[in-house]
Image (cartoon, rainbow, N blue to C red):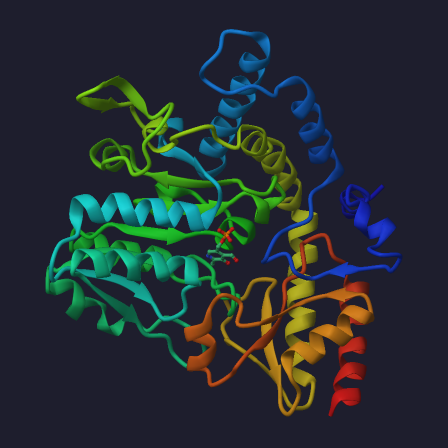
Length: 406
Ligand SMILES: Cc1ncc(COP(=O)(O)O)c(C=O)c1O
């Protein structure tokens, strides 16, 4: 069996459909489907490794702790972090960025300081910074994007020279534009002014090989559920010296060293930042998810992905009145588009009836979509295991839907 067929056989929805109808799932940027091998692990661990981690001496707790910590080591190796102590488990990218914004701002952001993000961020990498800037009396500034969706870094030197910029936070890959951003260049430039950088890798971890040491980013966030792991899982990577220096945010069990009525000393990272009972079974699935992702990064699957990108890019742009947002050679398998005179949600609704699961609306990126002058878009985000035949059927169906709605 070819690798792609073997991978596809792991997803029950492909053979079983949904509500009695077949479905081509093109909404992976929101969440991925989970392979059967991972679901079997999840079920096994619910039965035989369900006990609180790091606390009890009994065998169920030992099993749970072993799987939880094995996932941390797997994540360390997957992103090439220096130590598993740099891997904080969270419930997803949103939780990672809220955690970072709060611990970083407590220690390092004051009145009149600047936090820098880009105009193309997901709400999760915008709202937490707006909130902490407001509470610290700091200012949030935006790196502009050009019409084609690429960053305009020409303002960077001017801003960084002011010495008020305390951190830059930017997406590795935009969830709207599908463009791989020049994060290496941004990090190098920021570091030349001594400014640390956080990368929102919610899409980046899915579509590119992430090596945090080669990137030299100071922090990197991502969600497990977009990379085939269980829902409610995620990671905040941080360089150890920062994690040792920064204060905890949430207080509770496991994040403490000693507690008295008069005060508390804290655990070392990463547990300092993991207060309370974590989603230990969910997080443990990061290990089989990473094993699965390695298959998707084989040359056969990468070739398939490239074929799909090239086909969709060409065919979408051929449709009369359809405009794709973002135009860059650094495109991943993610396209957002609008069609003149047709409402985005009508397209998604009719396409659903034809068996295609798409996303429509503001994509949690309201300022960016409004900047382009739209009130919503349609987004397709196939997975590397989708086939050219599915993409061809998609283009044909889309053509039909547009002519019905025009
Ligand atoms: C670029 C980006 N950042 C952040 C998020 C938020 O991720 P989550 O909802 O898993 O916390 C998403 C989700 O789509 C995203 O695409």
